Amino acid sequence: MRKKILLALPVLIVPLFLFHNCLGYFYHLGKGQFDIMRKRKDIGVLLQSNQLDAETKQKLTKVTQARIFAIKHLKLSPEGGFVYYVSLDREELGWHVTASYPLEFKPYTWWFPIVGDVPYKGYFSLKKTKIEQEKLDRQGLDTRLRITAGYSTLGWFSDPIFSTQIKRDEDQIFALVFHEMAHGTIYFNGDALFNESYANFVEEKGTELYYQKLNTENAKTILQERAERKEKNRLVIEEIKHTAKLLDAMYKSEITDAQKHKKKQELLQLFKDTVSERLSRFKSFSRERLQKKQLNNEDFIGALRYNSGEAFFVKKFQECRQDFTCFHQKMRKLQELSQEERKKLLLPYQQEQ
Image (cartoon, rainbow, N blue to C red):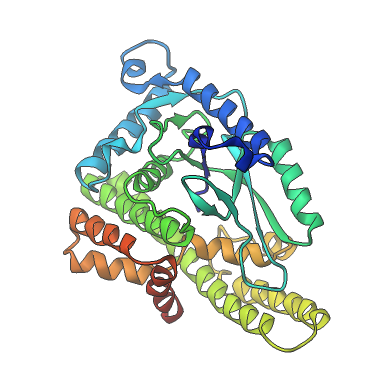
């Protein structure tokens, strides 16, 4: 699942008294963004120079190929970035924290100008992210701290590829580029459910199409590996959706909070046991790792944020006879709907799967 830092730098032109509690955060983001702008280098120029080692040059060549493919075949906006490269002096691009209410199937959100409500808060510093998580923990919220894989300024700047990102396998680099360029093509403020699910669909379909067109033995192997991962993910998501419905119904019941906390732990353990049984045939699956994980609501809400409404997107894509220009036009028209109306388009399909 791709996660990103959404920068809200345009708030600098908004009256500061509106954000007296947020100035430190915006300063942190602004400083990080200006550092990125200072360090970025044109990929085309780098590839013609002797500044790169062979592996980095090969990976950046793949980034350029992914961008060209995204524009030509996936009909994504050429303003979606990936013309620059930034070498970072830290292990990860960034980190972010998400949170949910413990006895309610509802995400905790932050509001920022331009982008609206977002269910995650990203930092360029692990220490600052941990401080934010600890603050949310003290409020009694279910939290999760994750490494930030993706990054988007939603068209305010030309977003680069980072040294931390090109460490990925080739197909994951293509998937990342397609996902983030999808955000640069269509983004509805405050609607993380639609935005992430849409970008996830474009990422998956685009990566599959790229390797199908490549039609080499290596491409076939990559497609087989991705198909196995997709099948494993499908089984997990099925159980996530099922458990989410059980949790949601239980939270809305008339039992006491103490009983809800107890029932919650029982349902989370049942989820672990069921997933362990269903995924036992996959060599890459670790039952021990899953059983040790301390699950909470955020694991389920976060997963559904990126995996909702696939059948809806598939249906619309088929209606367009797999033409991406038509597909994006259909998706863009959904801006006329309210966030709740878009949610209803996705969730019925989600429940049927």
